[in-house]
Image (cartoon, rainbow, N blue to C red):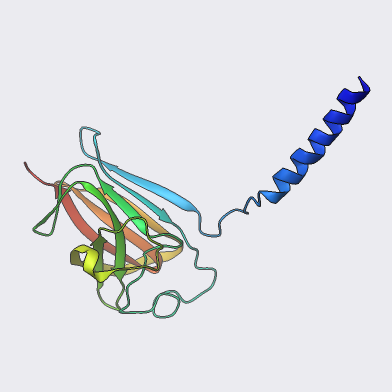
Length: 179
């Protein structure tokens, strides 16, 4: 019985030391989020995985996020979109698959970019892997948006993808491509 108690104490100490050495991180300052778009019959069309940085009394566009430069569109890793069906953005077909999303925010207009790299850091944009680019509509937010947010709005034909942060909202329309 004495040997069992000694073993139990040693095991407990070992477990505590191992747990401390694992170095579990604190909560992320820019939490991960997921948004889904399903069509009228509830089948998945698109899913976006992204991190949500907060404004925290900072000047966002033109300062933290410089104008006319490629932005990872969120925080941490590159924002990722999976299209479960072929879609049409503008008049170009984008095949079902997973892409990273980048944007180029401007004062009056943004550029929406789909990139074939999906495992890179959000800061590692490779222009030669760009699959698609288009202009985004930009308009003032009705109120300050504290945390970067992405959402879909269902339309008569397809959906609009909205990205909002601080005092701006940018959008791009898409629809499921006909076979």
